[in-house]
Length: 280
Ligand SMILES: Cc1cc2nc3c(=O)[nH]c(=O)nc-3n(C[C@H](O)[C@H](O)[C@H](O)COP(=O)(O)O)c2cc1C
Image (cartoon, rainbow, N blue to C red; front, side, top):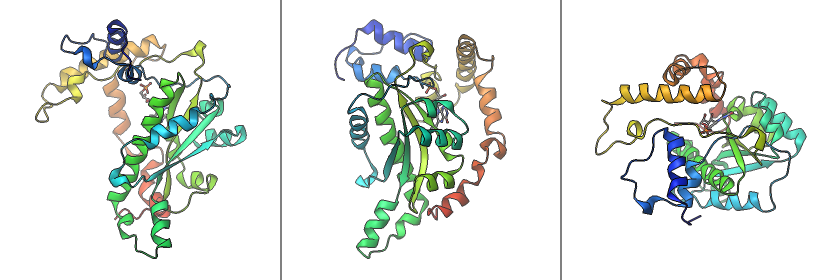
């Protein structure tokens, strides 16, 4: 993925992402196929029933395993679910998301400290550090970095994906369904398949870069104007998609307003304790 792409094509991806054209400061050296693949990302929620191309899963997992990993602990695993009946069960477990049934592959990404724990137990060695919140952060970060490499790999093959945070709706049921040992937690799922060309996904604009890229120090001074600008951009996208008009900031503020907005996931700490994460 290192070949050059025509600057116009790259500029149109940038423009789709920010709804403003790239500034003149973008050096040609920064224009390449890898970045274009990443800029072109859009979550896909409509899939053809066709199987993945041979070797696609294995190539994407090799990409996932190539991600950096804290202290080389490699504290993650993934369960690939292809059986339609089991995908239907996962669709129900994850809040009746139809794309889980539709996509030929559902990947359950597992924050996994259990392998390290088993290694220590076999060596009759303590594993006290696994009981600390820091170890949970490590496994969650490792899992997310690996998954995102897999997403980039699938998208580079022309396949579509959508993450499924709904896997955390009922983590204990997911643990039973997947036979997860203590110290393993289904962090999120990922649907993978061929995007349905009749219901293609569009690039969803993001916050202006100045809202997230700080130089030398964190500056929030310009934030209100940048958010107001993004509210308009995001609303324009909503209307283009035939979705209700709304300001992004209002939606986000509503979302974080109450624990009830977490839809049952406000009990995560006690659930994690039962799944073997002491979070000391
Ligand atoms: C960890 C994670 C969990 C997500 N869970 C869901 C989900 O359960 N269902 C869904 O339809 N989309 C889910 N998404 C997709 C987001 O809604 C999507 O990435 C976001 O709206 C931005 O859109 P885009 O990916 O098309 O750019 C999830 C994304 C992430 C990163």
